[in-house]
Each structure stands twice: as C-alpha cells, then as structure tokens.
Length: 125
Image (cartoon, rainbow, N blue to C red; front, side, top):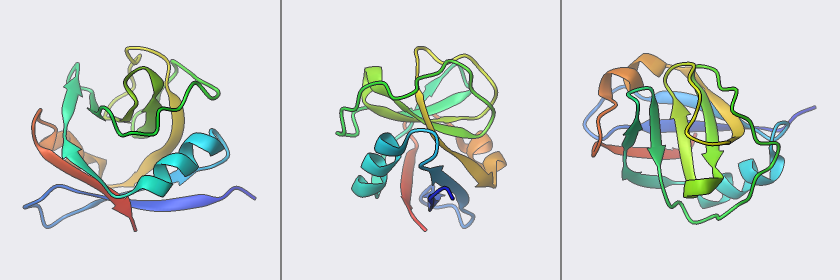
C-alpha cells in the first residue's frame, strides 16, 4: 500500500482552499523531503501561464524517476531550480521533474489566481 500525505494550498485573502496529496509511490525520497519542510510560503512564479512554481525551496534533491510527461493538476519537484511545481494544464515542463503528487480538489481556484508575485502557502492538511 502506498503512503499518501494530504496537503492544503492557501492563497492569503481567499476563503477557499485547494487540496492535494503527495504520494510516495512515484518518488518517495523527494516526496518525503518536501513533506518534512512544510509549510512552504513564497510568491508564485508562472511558466507559460500553465505552471505555478516556487524556486529555491532548500531540499536540493537530484533526479528521481524524472519525467517530461505531465498531467493537469500534478505536483512535482523541479531539480534544476530546487523548486516545487503545480501544473495547471497538461504541458511539457522546462526540464525534467520528479512527480510527487496531485491536486485533488479545487484546481480551478489556482487557475484563476495564478499570477506572478501572488503569495501561496503549501502545508500539511
């Protein structure tokens, strides 16, 4: 059985939240390393209006089952930028990522609020 970590994503000033999960089955070392440093609070960066990312989260992990095949709503670690990515649509990322989870509820809130410089908080549920 796969270990699942429940997360919540908040945008200050919004009453609604976004829910998601980290799954150890795909990239267990990366998922655990990010889980251990939660909460993460920073300003969003946006890639091609289809990906939110936070660069420099401080875990400095390498590639672990890296992929360029991403689905809408997936959450991944970006080794090149030591960052966490949330994919708002199915796109090809800038470079390989380690998929660690997915958004399970309210992806539309992130899609509507994804603006460079907006604060985002990723925390344990």
